[in-house]
Image (cartoon, rainbow, N blue to C red):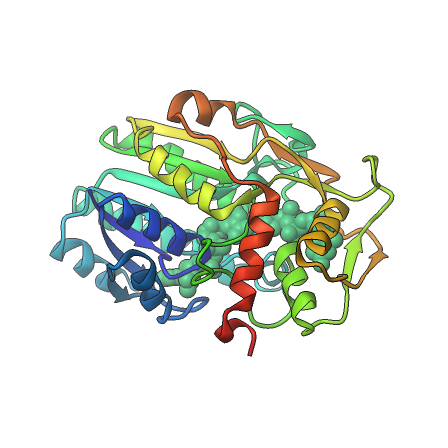
Length: 335
Ligand code: NAD
Ligand code: UD1
Protein backbone atom coordinates (compact mmCIF):
# COMPACT_ATOMS: atom_id res chain seq x y z
CA UNK A 1 0.00 0.00 0.00
CA UNK A 2 0.99 3.62 -0.53
CA UNK A 3 0.49 5.25 2.85
CA UNK A 4 0.60 8.92 3.79
CA UNK A 5 1.56 9.52 7.41
CA UNK A 6 0.92 12.94 8.92
CA UNK A 7 3.06 13.57 11.97
CA UNK A 8 5.39 10.78 10.79
CA UNK A 9 8.55 12.23 12.33
CA UNK A 10 6.86 12.37 15.75
CA UNK A 11 7.08 9.82 18.55
CA UNK A 12 4.29 7.42 17.59
CA UNK A 13 4.24 8.19 13.86
CA UNK A 14 7.94 7.32 13.45
CA UNK A 15 7.38 3.92 15.07
CA UNK A 16 4.46 3.25 12.73
CA UNK A 17 6.60 4.31 9.74
CA UNK A 18 9.21 1.71 10.77
CA UNK A 19 6.61 -1.07 11.00
CA UNK A 20 5.03 -0.11 7.66
CA UNK A 21 8.39 -0.01 5.86
CA UNK A 22 9.36 -3.35 7.37
CA UNK A 23 6.13 -4.85 6.05
CA UNK A 24 6.93 -3.57 2.55
CA UNK A 25 4.51 -0.64 2.37
CA UNK A 26 5.49 2.61 0.62
CA UNK A 27 5.45 5.55 2.98
CA UNK A 28 5.43 9.33 2.57
CA UNK A 29 5.46 11.67 5.55
CA UNK A 30 3.96 15.10 6.12
CA UNK A 31 5.14 17.02 9.18
CA UNK A 32 5.77 20.68 9.99
CA UNK A 33 8.50 19.67 12.49
CA UNK A 34 6.92 21.74 15.27
CA UNK A 35 7.53 18.90 17.71
CA UNK A 36 10.00 16.61 15.96
CA UNK A 37 13.33 16.64 14.18
CA UNK A 38 14.22 15.97 10.56
CA UNK A 39 17.06 13.68 11.76
CA UNK A 40 14.39 11.09 12.65
CA UNK A 41 14.39 10.23 8.94
CA UNK A 42 18.04 9.13 9.14
CA UNK A 43 17.26 7.03 12.20
CA UNK A 44 14.35 5.37 10.36
CA UNK A 45 16.75 4.60 7.51
CA UNK A 46 19.27 3.08 9.93
CA UNK A 47 16.58 0.74 11.26
CA UNK A 48 14.82 -0.20 8.04
CA UNK A 49 17.35 0.52 5.27
CA UNK A 50 14.74 2.78 3.66
CA UNK A 51 14.23 6.53 3.82
CA UNK A 52 10.64 7.66 3.41
CA UNK A 53 9.79 10.66 1.23
CA UNK A 54 9.31 13.71 3.44
CA UNK A 55 7.18 16.81 2.89
CA UNK A 56 7.63 19.68 5.33
CA UNK A 57 4.02 20.82 5.21
CA UNK A 58 1.72 22.33 7.81
CA UNK A 59 -1.79 20.90 7.81
CA UNK A 60 -3.08 24.44 8.11
CA UNK A 61 -1.61 25.13 4.64
CA UNK A 62 -4.34 23.48 2.57
CA UNK A 63 -2.88 24.27 -0.91
CA UNK A 64 0.45 22.65 0.06
CA UNK A 65 -1.43 19.64 1.39
CA UNK A 66 -3.41 19.39 -1.81
CA UNK A 67 -0.24 19.40 -3.87
CA UNK A 68 1.11 16.37 -1.98
CA UNK A 69 -2.12 14.38 -2.40
CA UNK A 70 -2.49 15.39 -6.03
CA UNK A 71 1.06 14.42 -6.99
CA UNK A 72 0.73 10.94 -5.50
CA UNK A 73 -2.36 8.81 -5.12
CA UNK A 74 -2.38 7.28 -1.65
CA UNK A 75 -4.34 4.18 -0.65
CA UNK A 76 -4.49 5.22 2.97
CA UNK A 77 -3.82 8.16 5.29
CA UNK A 78 -2.77 7.67 8.91
CA UNK A 79 -3.21 10.92 10.79
CA UNK A 80 -0.90 11.52 13.78
CA UNK A 81 -0.14 15.23 13.32
CA UNK A 82 -1.44 17.31 16.17
CA UNK A 83 -0.45 19.18 19.28
CA UNK A 84 -0.68 17.09 22.45
CA UNK A 85 0.26 19.00 25.57
CA UNK A 86 -2.64 18.94 28.01
CA UNK A 87 -1.27 21.87 30.04
CA UNK A 88 -0.53 24.04 26.99
CA UNK A 89 -4.02 23.35 25.62
CA UNK A 90 -5.55 24.79 28.79
CA UNK A 91 -3.48 27.97 28.38
CA UNK A 92 -3.91 28.27 24.60
CA UNK A 93 -7.18 26.61 23.60
CA UNK A 94 -7.50 28.41 20.25
CA UNK A 95 -4.09 27.16 19.16
CA UNK A 96 -5.22 23.59 19.91
CA UNK A 97 -8.65 23.86 18.30
CA UNK A 98 -7.15 25.52 15.24
CA UNK A 99 -4.20 23.17 14.78
CA UNK A 100 -5.90 19.89 15.62
CA UNK A 101 -9.41 20.45 14.32
CA UNK A 102 -8.81 22.77 11.35
CA UNK A 103 -5.75 20.70 10.44
CA UNK A 104 -7.88 17.53 10.38
CA UNK A 105 -10.70 19.19 8.41
CA UNK A 106 -8.18 20.42 5.82
CA UNK A 107 -6.75 16.93 5.51
CA UNK A 108 -10.17 15.28 5.13
CA UNK A 109 -11.29 17.90 2.58
CA UNK A 110 -8.23 17.28 0.45
CA UNK A 111 -8.66 13.50 0.81
CA UNK A 112 -12.26 13.80 -0.36
CA UNK A 113 -11.21 15.94 -3.32
CA UNK A 114 -8.46 13.52 -4.35
CA UNK A 115 -10.64 10.47 -3.65
CA UNK A 116 -8.59 8.93 -0.86
CA UNK A 117 -11.07 7.28 1.47
CA UNK A 118 -9.12 5.09 3.91
CA UNK A 119 -8.34 6.94 7.13
CA UNK A 120 -6.83 5.90 10.46
CA UNK A 121 -6.89 8.48 13.23
CA UNK A 122 -4.86 8.80 16.45
CA UNK A 123 -7.50 9.19 19.10
CA UNK A 124 -7.09 8.82 22.83
CA UNK A 125 -8.63 7.16 25.86
CA UNK A 126 -9.22 10.73 26.99
CA UNK A 127 -12.47 10.70 24.92
CA UNK A 128 -14.05 8.53 27.64
CA UNK A 129 -13.86 11.56 29.94
CA UNK A 130 -15.44 11.02 33.34
CA UNK A 131 -17.02 7.76 32.12
CA UNK A 132 -13.53 6.31 31.95
CA UNK A 133 -13.22 5.26 35.54
CA UNK A 134 -11.85 1.77 35.51
CA UNK A 135 -12.09 -0.39 32.42
CA UNK A 136 -13.01 1.36 29.17
CA UNK A 137 -15.01 -0.37 26.42
CA UNK A 138 -15.64 1.16 22.99
CA UNK A 139 -19.42 1.05 23.53
CA UNK A 140 -19.21 3.47 26.48
CA UNK A 141 -20.44 7.02 25.92
CA UNK A 142 -17.76 9.59 25.14
CA UNK A 143 -17.40 13.35 25.47
CA UNK A 144 -18.56 14.11 29.02
CA UNK A 145 -16.24 15.46 31.66
CA UNK A 146 -13.18 15.88 29.44
CA UNK A 147 -11.05 18.26 31.47
CA UNK A 148 -8.94 19.99 28.82
CA UNK A 149 -9.08 21.36 25.25
CA UNK A 150 -6.54 18.80 23.97
CA UNK A 151 -8.82 15.96 25.02
CA UNK A 152 -11.84 17.76 23.60
CA UNK A 153 -10.18 18.04 20.18
CA UNK A 154 -9.92 14.24 20.11
CA UNK A 155 -13.61 13.87 20.98
CA UNK A 156 -14.68 16.57 18.49
CA UNK A 157 -12.62 15.04 15.70
CA UNK A 158 -14.24 11.65 16.36
CA UNK A 159 -17.65 13.33 16.02
CA UNK A 160 -16.59 15.00 12.75
CA UNK A 161 -15.38 11.64 11.44
CA UNK A 162 -18.69 10.00 12.37
CA UNK A 163 -20.63 12.69 10.48
CA UNK A 164 -18.34 12.47 7.46
CA UNK A 165 -18.71 8.70 7.28
CA UNK A 166 -22.49 9.14 7.17
CA UNK A 167 -22.38 11.91 4.57
CA UNK A 168 -19.90 10.16 2.30
CA UNK A 169 -20.23 6.37 2.41
CA UNK A 170 -17.01 5.95 0.43
CA UNK A 171 -15.07 6.66 3.61
CA UNK A 172 -13.60 3.81 5.69
CA UNK A 173 -12.56 5.37 8.98
CA UNK A 174 -10.94 3.88 12.06
CA UNK A 175 -10.21 5.86 15.24
CA UNK A 176 -7.68 4.18 17.51
CA UNK A 177 -8.02 5.15 21.14
CA UNK A 178 -4.55 4.96 22.65
CA UNK A 179 -4.03 4.39 26.34
CA UNK A 180 -0.58 5.38 27.71
CA UNK A 181 2.15 4.77 25.13
CA UNK A 182 5.67 4.33 26.54
CA UNK A 183 9.03 2.93 25.43
CA UNK A 184 10.61 3.02 22.01
CA UNK A 185 12.10 0.85 19.26
CA UNK A 186 14.50 -1.72 20.76
CA UNK A 187 17.41 -0.21 18.77
CA UNK A 188 17.10 2.97 20.83
CA UNK A 189 17.40 4.95 17.58
CA UNK A 190 13.97 6.59 17.79
CA UNK A 191 11.94 7.57 20.82
CA UNK A 192 10.48 10.42 22.79
CA UNK A 193 12.55 12.95 24.67
CA UNK A 194 10.68 16.24 24.88
CA UNK A 195 12.38 19.57 25.56
CA UNK A 196 11.56 21.37 28.79
CA UNK A 197 9.63 19.95 31.70
CA UNK A 198 7.45 17.03 30.58
CA UNK A 199 3.87 16.51 31.77
CA UNK A 200 3.72 12.79 31.17
CA UNK A 201 5.08 10.17 33.53
CA UNK A 202 7.68 8.30 31.47
CA UNK A 203 9.31 11.38 29.90
CA UNK A 204 9.55 12.86 33.41
CA UNK A 205 11.12 9.67 34.78
CA UNK A 206 13.64 9.78 31.91
CA UNK A 207 14.69 13.34 32.79
CA UNK A 208 15.14 12.37 36.43
CA UNK A 209 17.15 9.29 35.41
CA UNK A 210 19.41 11.54 33.30
CA UNK A 211 19.84 13.93 36.21
CA UNK A 212 18.22 16.80 34.32
CA UNK A 213 15.40 17.00 36.87
CA UNK A 214 15.91 16.51 40.58
CA UNK A 215 13.07 14.20 41.50
CA UNK A 216 9.76 12.82 40.34
CA UNK A 217 6.60 13.98 42.10
CA UNK A 218 4.06 11.18 42.28
CA UNK A 219 0.73 12.96 42.10
CA UNK A 220 -1.42 11.46 44.85
CA UNK A 221 -0.92 8.40 47.05
CA UNK A 222 -4.38 8.41 48.61
CA UNK A 223 -6.40 7.02 45.70
CA UNK A 224 -8.58 3.99 46.22
CA UNK A 225 -6.02 1.60 44.72
CA UNK A 226 -3.72 -1.02 46.29
CA UNK A 227 -0.76 1.30 46.76
CA UNK A 228 -2.72 4.57 46.69
CA UNK A 229 -1.27 5.78 43.36
CA UNK A 230 -3.14 5.96 40.04
CA UNK A 231 -3.45 2.96 37.73
CA UNK A 232 -2.85 3.33 34.00
CA UNK A 233 -2.61 1.07 30.98
CA UNK A 234 0.97 1.58 29.75
CA UNK A 235 1.34 0.18 26.23
CA UNK A 236 4.70 -0.33 24.51
CA UNK A 237 4.82 1.99 21.50
CA UNK A 238 5.95 -0.85 19.22
CA UNK A 239 2.82 -2.84 20.14
CA UNK A 240 0.82 0.32 19.53
CA UNK A 241 2.48 0.76 16.13
CA UNK A 242 1.65 -2.84 15.19
CA UNK A 243 -1.96 -2.10 16.14
CA UNK A 244 -2.04 0.39 13.27
CA UNK A 245 -1.01 -2.26 10.77
CA UNK A 246 -3.69 -4.56 12.16
CA UNK A 247 -6.21 -1.72 11.88
CA UNK A 248 -5.71 -1.63 8.10
CA UNK A 249 -7.61 -4.92 8.06
CA UNK A 250 -10.37 -3.32 10.12
CA UNK A 251 -11.09 -0.60 7.57
CA UNK A 252 -14.69 -0.85 6.45
CA UNK A 253 -17.38 1.63 5.39
CA UNK A 254 -18.36 3.94 8.21
CA UNK A 255 -16.67 4.94 11.44
CA UNK A 256 -15.18 2.33 13.78
CA UNK A 257 -13.27 2.72 17.04
CA UNK A 258 -10.78 0.41 18.73
CA UNK A 259 -9.03 0.66 22.08
CA UNK A 260 -5.29 0.06 21.85
CA UNK A 261 -4.14 -0.96 25.31
CA UNK A 262 -2.85 -3.98 27.19
CA UNK A 263 -5.88 -4.42 29.44
CA UNK A 264 -3.51 -4.66 32.41
CA UNK A 265 -3.25 -1.68 34.73
CA UNK A 266 0.06 -0.72 36.36
CA UNK A 267 0.31 1.79 39.19
CA UNK A 268 2.55 4.84 39.07
CA UNK A 269 4.50 3.49 42.04
CA UNK A 270 4.89 0.06 40.40
CA UNK A 271 6.31 1.85 37.36
CA UNK A 272 8.84 3.72 39.49
CA UNK A 273 9.83 0.52 41.33
CA UNK A 274 10.22 -1.38 38.05
CA UNK A 275 12.36 1.42 36.59
CA UNK A 276 14.63 1.33 39.65
CA UNK A 277 14.94 -2.45 39.52
CA UNK A 278 15.76 -2.64 35.80
CA UNK A 279 18.12 0.36 35.76
CA UNK A 280 19.78 -0.74 39.00
CA UNK A 281 19.67 2.86 40.24
CA UNK A 282 17.40 4.66 42.61
CA UNK A 283 15.03 7.16 41.06
CA UNK A 284 14.53 10.10 43.40
CA UNK A 285 10.80 10.57 44.00
CA UNK A 286 8.36 12.03 46.50
CA UNK A 287 4.62 11.95 47.00
CA UNK A 288 2.79 15.15 46.10
CA UNK A 289 -0.77 16.48 45.87
CA UNK A 290 -3.18 14.88 43.40
CA UNK A 291 -3.02 16.45 39.93
CA UNK A 292 -6.33 18.12 39.02
CA UNK A 293 -8.26 16.23 36.35
CA UNK A 294 -6.60 12.84 36.97
CA UNK A 295 -8.75 9.73 37.22
CA UNK A 296 -7.74 7.04 39.74
CA UNK A 297 -7.98 4.09 37.36
CA UNK A 298 -8.00 4.02 33.57
CA UNK A 299 -7.33 0.96 31.46
CA UNK A 300 -8.47 -0.62 28.23
CA UNK A 301 -10.72 -3.47 27.51
CA UNK A 302 -8.82 -4.53 24.36
CA UNK A 303 -11.18 -7.41 23.36
CA UNK A 304 -12.62 -5.71 20.29
CA UNK A 305 -9.17 -5.22 18.71
CA UNK A 306 -8.28 -8.80 19.57
CA UNK A 307 -11.43 -10.29 18.07
CA UNK A 308 -11.79 -8.07 15.01
CA UNK A 309 -8.19 -7.14 14.20
CA UNK A 310 -6.41 -10.20 15.58
CA UNK A 311 -4.13 -7.83 17.48
CA UNK A 312 -2.97 -7.92 21.06
CA UNK A 313 0.02 -6.58 22.92
CA UNK A 314 3.12 -8.77 23.21
CA UNK A 315 5.54 -6.53 25.10
CA UNK A 316 5.56 -5.68 28.81
CA UNK A 317 6.21 -2.59 30.89
CA UNK A 318 9.60 -4.15 31.69
CA UNK A 319 10.39 -4.37 27.95
CA UNK A 320 9.43 -0.71 27.58
CA UNK A 321 11.72 0.29 30.46
CA UNK A 322 14.63 -1.73 29.02
CA UNK A 323 14.14 -0.09 25.62
CA UNK A 324 13.90 3.33 27.25
CA UNK A 325 17.27 2.72 28.92
CA UNK A 326 18.75 1.74 25.53
CA UNK A 327 17.38 5.00 24.08
CA UNK A 328 18.82 7.00 26.97
CA UNK A 329 22.22 5.37 26.49
CA UNK A 330 22.51 6.74 22.93
CA UNK A 331 25.17 9.49 22.90
CA UNK A 332 22.82 12.05 21.32
CA UNK A 333 20.22 11.49 24.05
CA UNK A 334 22.65 11.65 26.92
CA UNK A 335 25.22 14.33 26.11
P1 NAD B 1 4.35 14.02 18.62
O1 NAD B 1 4.23 15.45 19.01
O2 NAD B 1 5.64 13.33 18.88
O3 NAD B 1 4.01 13.86 17.06
C1 NAD B 1 3.08 14.69 16.41
C2 NAD B 1 3.74 15.24 15.15
O4 NAD B 1 2.80 16.09 14.49
C3 NAD B 1 4.98 16.07 15.44
O5 NAD B 1 6.06 15.57 14.68
C4 NAD B 1 4.59 17.48 15.01
O6 NAD B 1 5.69 18.19 14.49
C5 NAD B 1 3.51 17.22 13.99
N1 NAD B 1 2.51 18.30 13.83
C6 NAD B 1 1.79 18.92 14.79
N2 NAD B 1 0.96 19.83 14.23
C7 NAD B 1 1.15 19.76 12.89
C8 NAD B 1 0.59 20.45 11.78
N3 NAD B 1 -0.32 21.41 11.92
N4 NAD B 1 1.02 20.13 10.55
C9 NAD B 1 1.96 19.17 10.35
N5 NAD B 1 2.53 18.50 11.37
C10 NAD B 1 2.13 18.79 12.62
O7 NAD B 1 3.15 13.24 19.30
P2 NAD B 1 2.88 11.68 19.42
O8 NAD B 1 3.03 11.31 20.85
O9 NAD B 1 3.64 10.96 18.39
O10 NAD B 1 1.34 11.64 19.12
C11 NAD B 1 0.83 11.36 17.82
C12 NAD B 1 -0.69 11.46 17.84
O11 NAD B 1 -1.19 10.55 18.80
C13 NAD B 1 -1.19 12.85 18.26
O12 NAD B 1 -2.34 13.14 17.50
C14 NAD B 1 -1.55 12.65 19.72
O13 NAD B 1 -2.54 13.54 20.15
C15 NAD B 1 -2.05 11.22 19.71
N6 NAD B 1 -1.96 10.59 21.04
C16 NAD B 1 -0.75 10.54 21.68
C17 NAD B 1 -0.68 9.97 22.94
C18 NAD B 1 0.65 9.91 23.68
O14 NAD B 1 0.65 9.60 24.87
N7 NAD B 1 1.78 10.18 23.05
C19 NAD B 1 -1.82 9.45 23.55
C20 NAD B 1 -3.03 9.50 22.86
C21 NAD B 1 -3.08 10.07 21.59
C1 UD1 C 1 -2.45 12.25 29.90
C2 UD1 C 1 -3.64 13.06 29.45
C3 UD1 C 1 -4.27 12.41 28.24
C4 UD1 C 1 -3.24 12.17 27.16
C5 UD1 C 1 -2.07 11.36 27.72
C6 UD1 C 1 -0.97 11.18 26.73
C7 UD1 C 1 -4.58 14.16 31.43
C8 UD1 C 1 -5.72 14.21 32.38
N1 UD1 C 1 -4.61 13.17 30.51
O1 UD1 C 1 -2.89 10.98 30.37
O2 UD1 C 1 -5.28 13.25 27.75
O3 UD1 C 1 -3.82 11.46 26.06
O4 UD1 C 1 -1.53 12.05 28.86
O5 UD1 C 1 -0.42 12.38 26.35
O6 UD1 C 1 -3.67 14.96 31.50
N2 UD1 C 1 2.19 11.30 37.03
C9 UD1 C 1 2.94 11.57 38.18
N3 UD1 C 1 3.99 12.43 38.08
C10 UD1 C 1 4.33 13.06 36.92
C11 UD1 C 1 3.57 12.76 35.75
C12 UD1 C 1 2.50 11.90 35.85
O7 UD1 C 1 2.65 11.05 39.25
O8 UD1 C 1 5.28 13.84 36.90
C13 UD1 C 1 1.06 10.37 37.15
C14 UD1 C 1 -0.26 11.03 36.81
O9 UD1 C 1 -0.83 11.61 37.95
C15 UD1 C 1 -1.06 9.84 36.28
C16 UD1 C 1 0.01 8.91 35.67
O10 UD1 C 1 1.25 9.34 36.19
O11 UD1 C 1 -1.66 9.18 37.35
C17 UD1 C 1 0.06 9.02 34.16
O12 UD1 C 1 0.15 10.39 33.80
P1 UD1 C 1 0.43 10.89 32.31
O13 UD1 C 1 1.63 10.22 31.77
O14 UD1 C 1 0.42 12.38 32.31
O15 UD1 C 1 -0.81 10.31 31.49
P2 UD1 C 1 -2.39 10.46 31.75
O16 UD1 C 1 -2.68 11.48 32.77
O17 UD1 C 1 -2.93 9.10 31.97
